[in-house]
Image: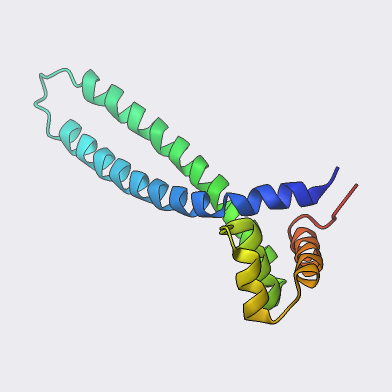
Amino acid sequence: MDYRDYAKDLLSRKKSLISAYSAIKGELNALEVEKTACKNAISNLPPDYDGRIYDDRLINILADLDDCRFRRSVVERELLKIEKGMNGLNDYQRDLIDGFFVDYTHGITEELMEKWFKERSTLYLDRNRALEVFTRSVYGVVQL
């Protein structure tokens, strides 16, 4: 089992995870507002009115909140892995990881060669070393 493949996949999803985290935070806020509105509606019902519709809606909102919190914890865990892995790298290695695995664009190799005054072969060797350092920081091992 080669954990570098897992690390590459994790890095390729970084932007999506950041976007998802933001969306989930917004969804949580909206659900909290909806929960409060539903509770207020239940408390303001006349005594002779059947409030089962509001009760059912509140139950659904609470279930959605639990699901949303679970999804947020999964995304937070993934983003924390990326952050911890990146903290173990120097600026050069961080640029390599970002350039090759997170924000890959056509021509990134030439851009990094020019920025860091490195030859192509050296850049690729350093990229592999940076990926190993990142992988060890996140998973503890590179291969099993």
